[in-house]
Amino acid sequence: MAFSASDVIPLSQARANFSELADQVKAGTEKIITKNGESYVAIIDAQRLDHYHQLEREHIHLQLIDDARQGLDDVAAGKVKDARSTLAALKRRRAAGAPG
Image 1 (tube, rainbow, N blue to C red):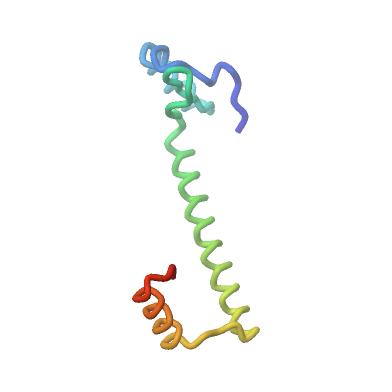
Image 2: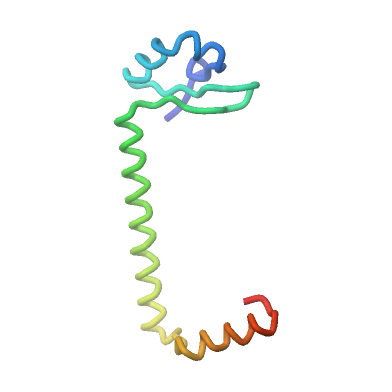
């Protein structure tokens, strides 16, 4: 979503006009509150926040599916190691002080 200059508000102004800002956000805008000239917090509609959280969960699920697909592709290509020997090698390296 694009922001206009009127969507960026100093904290002191936001405190004085919070109810009005909340009404504007409920009507569809998002507001960026600044503190000392820097972005500080955002005010967004609660339903939009729920939507953002849902998108984040979906993104995580897609990443997990992609990781699983990559793992299956590795197995199919023979890019595998025996778990016991790999864990033993890691333990030996750690005991020797080498980075694992």
